[in-house]
Every structure is written in structure tokens, then in C-alpha cells.
Image (cartoon, rainbow, N blue to C red; front, side, top):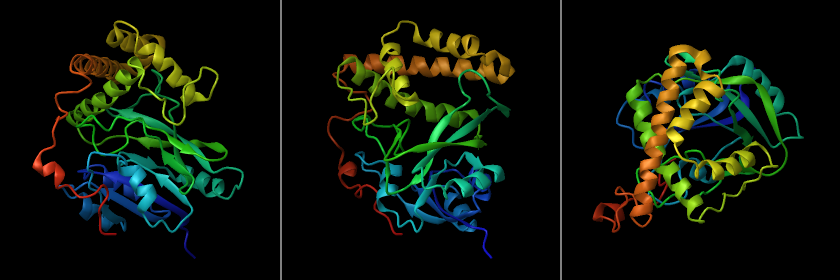
Length: 313
């Protein structure tokens, strides 16, 4: 008798050979695994197929939808429930047991999972990094990532950054943690957050210029956790000295110092990240809403890109 659970896993990937073995090994209780790859040049495809995953190639044309939403729209999932897992994340046996029980409950259409973030080999338990709730398990026909209108900024990557899933119906919370630990070096952390800061700068710019529509979820001081966070961001983007404030908030006010050297380093990098957002926001405000990475005219190679998500399944 098979112990597989009727869950389809979606993993967005690109050059993740260091993380994929541990990730895929933790997902073997799922009935089906899709790895949606972006033309990896390392062994990502080989490793994925070794663990029994179905590999689909995604070609981003610079417009909506990005990778996860395209996958939710186009992949032939054979199960009602989808679990979205990044390559640097792992699902523990205890969490699988909880998932098995949760998907039998007709009251909920989705569940938040709590991430336990590791950095430099240490669990970052403080600084506001825990709990870290993410809506990752849901009925795939009922959930889609929101569009925050940031597609005009290049070099943000082809995957959703901090967009949230919008889902119909009631949502629950699972208690066992999902583990998040990148086995690559700090170069990749810095490279990834350099791209993320392009996206964040556009979000800040949209707020300050009145072009922010808050996505589908909206912003409200009296709403849920995501709505409150978005309300506070509207205040945050207008504050001075944000890199300094980001460090003080993480390291002192929220207790990041309790995580030792790893907490201090993480706090310093968050402060640097906030500075990157700030200088890119300055560039946007002084270049008519364009980063220098955003071309005013597409190159010939841009026009030859396949349609977003063209693939052989």
C-alpha cells in the first residue's frame, strides 16, 4: 500500500544543484513533484529527474505572469492540493503528518506554513524572523499570486518575490515548521537580494507616487497580518534613515542580538539591503520611473523570446 499523499508539489528552480537533493529528499511523501526550471546550466535537471520529479522549462518574456502563477495556470496537476516549496526549503516528517490530516478537513481551502530560517548554520529565531507564516498549501484551482505591477523593472528574476497568494475561502495554520536553509554561499544571498531590491524599489516608488493599488489583498491597519504589514509599509517608505532603522528594529528592538554572530551579520545585511532599495528608489525618482537596467527599447533578442512559460510537459 502506497504511503504517498494526494498532494502535488511545485518547486521553482534555477541553478539549484546544491539545494535540490535535500529539498527533494524531504518531499518523497508527495504523490507528484513538478520542478519548474529556468534553463539551469548546472545539474538541477539531472538531480530533479533522479528524485522522480517532472521537469518543466519556463521561459520568461518579462511580462506577467511570472513562474509560480504560470505554473498554477498551466501544469497538469493530478491532485486537488498543491504545496509550493522553494529549493532551499524542506518539509519535515512531522509537518507531512500534519499535512496528511489537514487536507482531509473540508473547512479550509488553504494553510499557512511557518518557516524556520537558518543563516550561517544558525536558526534566526529573533529579529521578527519567527514566526514566518507563508501560504504554501492550498487547493490549486482557488489560489493565485497577486500582481503588484512591478513587471516594468528588469533584473528582478522570473519568479514571484514577495507577492502573496490570494485564495477563496477559509485559511488555516499548521503548527509544525518548514525548514529554510540555503546551502550555497553568501554570494548567492547577496546576488538574490540585489535582484529583490529592484522589485522593492518599484514597490516603494509606486507607493510614493500614488501608483500603488495594494495588489488584490489591500492595506488596512485593522485587517489581517498581510494587510497590516502593507499599511505599515506605507508609513515606512516615508521615514528617513531607513537602513539604520532597519538594523535597530531587527537587532535591538526585536532581539536579533540573541542570535549571536549570525544575528548581527543578518541584521547588517538587512541594513545594506535597505540601503540598496533606497538608492534604486532615488534612481527611479530621478529617471522618470526607470532603473538604468530597464531598457527603453527592446533589443532584437528580447523580441525573439518564447511566450512566457512555453515548455514541453
